[in-house]
Structures are given as structure tokens and as C-alpha cells.
Length: 169
Image (cartoon, rainbow, N blue to C red; front, side):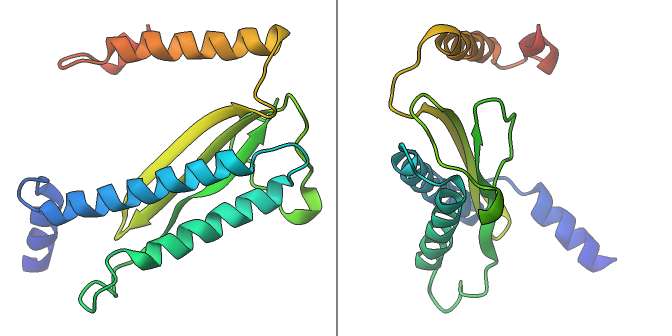
């Protein structure tokens, strides 16, 4: 029972009590942000979706080996917290195809990118939406603008003391 109490104490610890937790979260977030930039840069005309996902996942794995690499930290668990997904156009989310199911990006494709890295279970995740070729028009542009406006409105309702229901409304 004593071990369970210790685990609960670690779980209840704050970032102030254990700054190493914050360091792990920050390092994972920095890697996720760098991987997101890489994914955005690779999302160009004629790029293969499966290849992009694989390259970004490999990038995350390589970057994770560079942090907390001293002897004491070598045993930390680290890896992909959320596999790189490129959901294109009408695909709602979480699309990371195998090479046989993949396709190439075209001008005007709306690409929703999601990915994440973790160090010792502390995850940093990132996401972004891009339009291949950089320009959106018509109904697609209206939908992107509406989603952005909805996000901004929801973000304004997040404050101390607010409830999830406040954001939903």
C-alpha cells in the first residue's frame, strides 16, 4: 500500500513541486511544434500523404533522442504521442494512410495536420490547417473563415471560473 501512496503523491504533485515535469512537457511541445512546421513545409502540390506522415513521425523520433540524453535520463520513455495525421478535404480527422491507400496532394486541398510527441508520458501535441497552394476560394474559404471565427469566439469565453458549457454555448 505504501507504493500506491507514493504514486498518488507523484500524481498530485504540481509543476512548482516538480519542475522536471514542466521540463518534459516543454521539451515535448518544442519537438511537436518543430514537427508541425516540417509537416506544413512538406504539404505541397504532388506530395504523397503517407510519405509526409512517415517523414514527420521519423523526425519526431530523431528529435526525441536529442533531449534528456544523459545517462540518468536515457531510460525515460519517449515516443510519438499522436501519430502524424493529414486529413484532407472531407476527411474529418485522424488520417494516416499506409502507402497503398495514399494519394498526392493537389492545389486547393484543405489539409488538417495533427501530431504529438511525449517524454516520460508528458505529451505535447500540435495541429494546424493549411490550404495547399496557399489560397482558398468559394465555399471552402467560407468554411475556413467560419471555423476560424468560431474558434476565436470560443477562445474568448475561456476564463477563470468559466465552465465547459459556457464555451459550448
